[in-house]
Length: 394
Ligand SMILES: Nc1nc2c(ncn2[C@@H]2O[C@H](COP(=O)(O)OP(=O)(O)O)[C@@H](O)[C@H]2O)c(=O)[nH]1
Ligand SMILES: [Mg+2]
Image 1 (cartoon, rainbow, N blue to C red):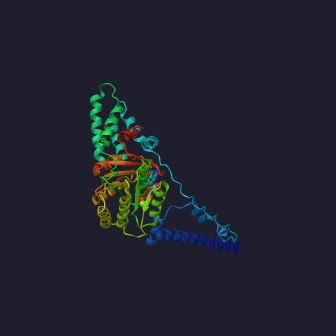
Image 2: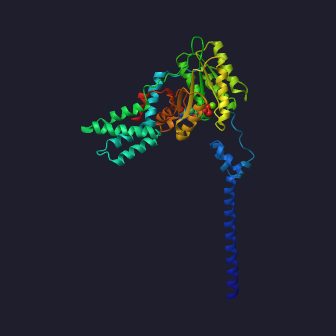
Image 3: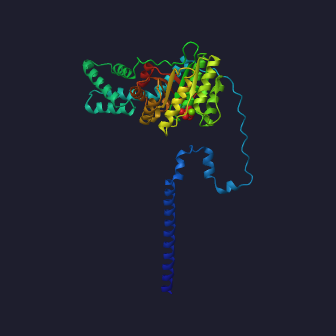
């Protein structure tokens, strides 16, 4: 009997081991298959998919029984959008005060870090290296970093007899790098009866449309008259987006059907602006960078066609401050395509890397004229070298 029982145990044991191994192999192969799928071209589209919303999350995790439930409540009927009411945009003075605080919140770390290092009792080589790293980390760029470190070394050595005012020295040197002598005025008016024409360029997602809308508000706050041209005709959503900005401040948006030639929309917008005798025409563009030659053709044509009506008075390159070196590469490409006259640095509220102001000005030889400091409609301010340097120092 004992013999048979042993056999039974052995067989049961073997079956169990086989079962467990089988499950393990199965899940292993499933996992492997999952990985393979992620690498197929089809799987790659996930990267482009918009971030999951809460609704997606709920659907994905909801147990199957919930989905099958027959009496699901009908989704609530969305409220009809309220009729647009005209807004009075915030004036330049008040937004400067408000946005300065935001600027020091995002950028203040750089100056504080530098001051702490420079205030050490002994400025040894390790400390200078830390200072260099701090500057590079803020995207100031290699050449300006070396220049600044040289200047600080010399000045703190020479003036270091007593106790030098480190903050004052640092502020002076940072200000010199940001270059307060650059002309940062926006050319938003034309000669005589001509309107000013502002062409806004940059890669998709950098904040062009938002910036065009914000500039319209800035001008409306000064009681200037504006027409906008929605020359990003590739996505209906982009045209809609600009339309909304226009409605809120009573600015006409010239548009064409989806897929229209961007140059023809730009042409119509300037024509309209001229006919109405407005001060400024703002032209939004598309910024697909997959193909430099195509982009060059397109933007070149937009500019040429506009200039059959009126000269372009300002070409603003919109740059996302959070994109670092990548953004610098884009900036270079655009500056080869069009004659950029000013830079708008957006999303400075979401990045501590304000040093890119210095880097991009150096690279393009063109001043930063405006900075975007949030998604709010009036979160755009004229760039002021002095205020920016103060913000860096916290
Ligand atoms: N935080 C922040 N977000 C911004 C700023 N400027 C634009 N954005 C956001 O960036 C996204 C892309 O902007 P959009 O104007 O559509 O970019 P476009 O593709 O270049 O026209 C939008 O979600 C904007 O709200 C800014 O200064 N700060
Ligand atoms: Mg856009």
